[in-house]
Length: 247
Image (cartoon, rainbow, N blue to C red; front, side):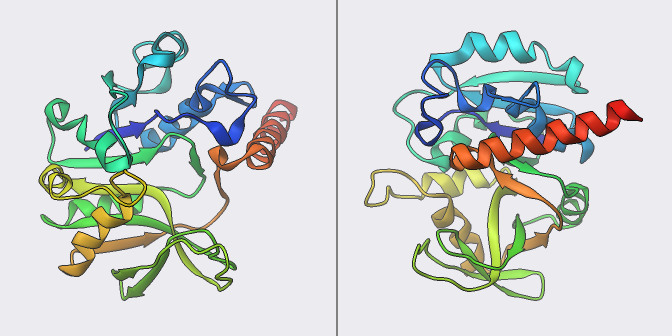
């Protein structure tokens, strides 16, 4: 299993904090956000990571993460994302010629998930085809991608609707694919906003009955979603660090 961590993006929702740095390099209780994301993959048994970055803050990533050994990785490689890349599938596609395994664990570099990803990795490894999505159950799916599930299969992915207030399962921005995903990405067409969309990619699998789901419990946060989310995550990990220090 190769980890592919997506660490590009403009980070406009975290302005002005991102005026001079990447949102994934912002400190969360003294540690770069992306380092905490990588730690989630390491706990799931992933020891080789491709970090997809753009040209603006490459030196910052190299200085903060170096070769990844301090993070518990066997290898950390940096993959250049050109400014012409638009959308998450386009970012994933940059890793195609660097992946040496059949399985990929793709993670957004600004989403923290405290629940273990290992059950999803284990379940994915038991099936030679299809994809798997990490999901959480929430009381309000507004502005998220809601999932319609039958058993452990996703049968439909809804559109993001800020006016839809209903409980349900939502996509957390963490996915498992086989190498065939690169061919699937080439079949995508840009959406109305000019980007390839991750939900369009996952719908291709869902229509064939090949998109499984693993629900994780516990705290999670789309830290890049806004200043309130970032400050809440920073405060949470600062409290945890203080408790650890006290013991």
